[in-house]
Length: 67
Image (cartoon, rainbow, N blue to C red):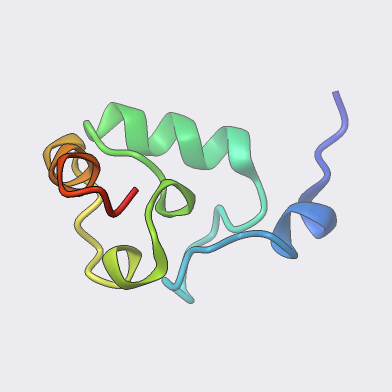
């Protein structure tokens, strides 16, 4: 399968500029799941900027209706 990194970058919500996985969604998802996290694109912008990508943070956002 061909990586569509350039196309993915147009929609990548990650604000971590030094990320070497930007636009490479399969690598990003694999990395974050191993860390018990979700990638930044699963979070609204204000929540993503906190860099708290934990499952627990996501659940709190869902419970509060922010996702």
